[in-house]
Structure formats: structure tokens, C-alpha cells
Length: 313
Image (cartoon, rainbow, N blue to C red):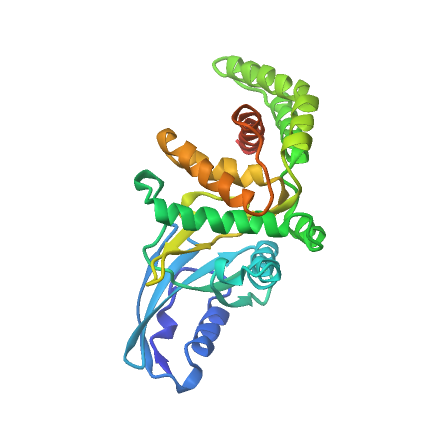
């Protein structure tokens, strides 16, 4: 037995904690294991839904990360780890999911992941070999999943981040602003946002054509490719990358992920990072558009994300 399991998330009022503790007992070598719970730390203080747990098991320290998710997002993340990425030979590049359990009332699910340690990709101090490993993994995912038979399933569980994401977010942001009744001090802000969004709406045909001509085939997207979701672990034969947090996985053009990824790097690094990606996809027969065309695609994706923020604020 593992001593102190009852202290995991004690007093947190988290749903499904009893089921999570049972899952941890089974995963940590079951009732045959000899050990104790050591400590926990919160990895996302604002959301209070991701925690690192440390145990002493049979004389060795074991660390896992547990994450509370909405059931539909948990299902999407599990499919990415166990079905979509393995389908293209990249099971080892996805989230290291060890197990999952659903709260009996269906309010949430808990995922348990292997703790990858302090190996998040740091875009401010970009080590070229680490960035190369990350870029190669992302490029392999994009090129191997292009026009894949499972894209319909990905779209069903994750949605679409292509031109429809742009169109629907701009439209819904306009709806939200039209319904907003601001005070005198904020009326000017609303009018400026409305004018900008109307311009984005008018640009839809041009941007749709650009994506159709230069965006490439639809593929699996991580959907939230910040550097904090990229881990690069050192090994004797070179670094290996893994992508975590597949909450926003979806279908769309590879440029959506690429724009998110590049934006996290200081401007002076973006060109060589882009060159690494350009070469990686060229090895699979893809040819990226030129810089001007790519910038239009990147701009379209960023405006999509900004419009989405307008809706919820």
C-alpha cells in the first residue's frame, strides 16, 4: 500500500479525487507497492487543475502530473495520445498519458501523465538542437497526417481551425459587440473594434483564397503550440521532443500551428526556426509559400485568435 494517498488534493474540494486516488494506487504498482506520498505542487495556480505529485515507491522517487479536464477535452486528449499520433508512428512524441478516470457524475475526468521534468522548450534561449528536434516532430505530424483517413474523427472531437474558424470568430465577435452597451468612456473602443472587425469580415474572400492556394492540405493540428507545450528531453543519442496539452487539437492548415509556434520566439530567431520547418517539410515533398504569402496566412490565424478573445471578453 502507498501511505498518505488520502492526502492527495486533501481539502481541495476537487471532484473525482477519490477515483483519482484509486487510479494512482493501481498505477503505482498496485497493492504490492511499498511507498508513501511525499508532496504535491500546483502547476497552474489560476485554474487549480494541474498538479505534480511525488511518491517514494519501493525506495525510489516517482513523480507524475495529474490534470483535471472537462470530459470532452479529456476524450480529445486521450484520442491524440492513444489513437491519432500512434496512427502515424508518432506515439512516442505525444503526451505521456499513463491512465485516466472519469468522475462518477460525469463532471470531469482526471488524466495522469508521466512527469517529463524541467525540459520545456525555452524560446528566449533557443538551443538550435532542441528547436530542431521540436520542429522535426511538428513537421512529421503535419506531413504524415495530411489528408489522413482519421481527419473526420479529429474534426468531430476537436473542430476546425481553418478559414471557418476565422469567419465564425469574426462574425461572433461582431454579434458580441453589437449587443454590448458600453458607457461613454468605452463607446469609442467599441466603435473602433467594430470597424476593425468589419474590415476583417470584408477581407474574408481574399484570405480564404490565400489559404486555399498556399495553406496546403488539411492535417492534424496541436492547436495550442506554445513553447510551454513542447518538451525536449536530452538522451545520449540526441534530444527527443514531446508535445503535451492537446486540449485544442483540431483540423486545419499547418500554418495555424506554425504561426503559434513562431510567435513565441523573439523576432530575431523566427527566420531560422522557420527555415528549419521549411526544410523538414521539404523532406516530405511539401513546399511552403514565400515570406509574403506566409505572413498573410499567419496574420489570418492571429486575427482569428484575437477575434475569439473579443467574444469572451
